[in-house]
Length: 148
Image (cartoon, rainbow, N blue to C red):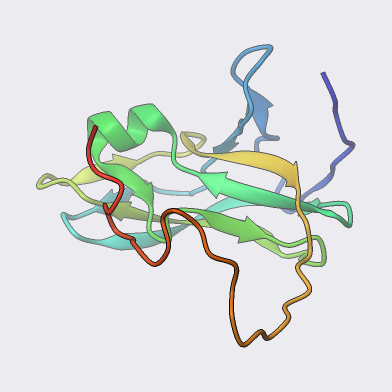
């Protein structure tokens, strides 16, 4: 398995360093850091501190995804769906959690709130063209390939 070194700075001594749930997990769990419970009403979004900053190497990006159990069972997921941590960002990782459920939800201190996936990326060189190559699909979008 390939790995990359990610330097982490604890901005608070009580912050929890991200941890992988299993040997082959792609995402490392991010933990909340709060001095009191955060109550999320239905439809509400709150910025949740993690108390950590990371040094993502150039050519990589940190992607913050929902934790499947929290999202599917509780209706709590990142408001922006996928957070992006660029390699030049050195501030605290904050997770904007949104309550999609119809019930109040509570985020407690040191709760696993999201997962961080570190992955390489390509930087695109955008080039304006008068025409694009034809494909079988063409301009069909939003379900144009069918359900089955």
